[in-house]
Image (cartoon, one colour):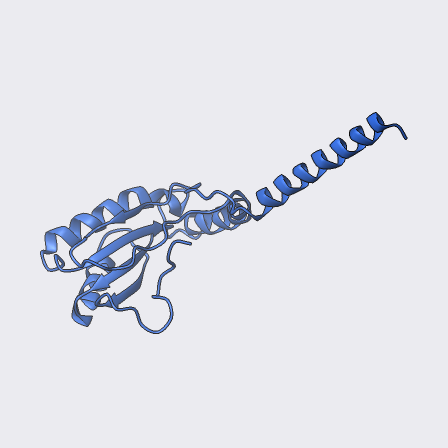
Length: 173
């Protein structure tokens, strides 16, 4: 093998190592996440500093592909069973969440809370921090009274000190 051939082989091996390292780095990088289904996620109040911000409804492309079938099934079953006037339960969310935020503001009893509202298929998640257990109960009661809301899932903590382990809601990675 000539010196030129050796240099060519060495260069080829070096390029392969660089390519393998770049591929390994790309594989270990977290997949980008986004709100593929445009699920509403809104900060309704922000009066309790230090409350951990919940993770928005973001998914990787692989998670989105996995969820697509289930969302189609869950969304249309409401209409097929006669419980929804719209053909898909997810169509309500863009209307429900703003009404929830408006109702919370109009109540005037939640200025000392930090609450985020997430909506999916007529279900409303309340995530964040309240000052008292009574506020958590009143928030849940208030949201249950809003037209088209099928379920309310309260994931609220009292105060900003987290219980042992993570809060009831998912935090950003």
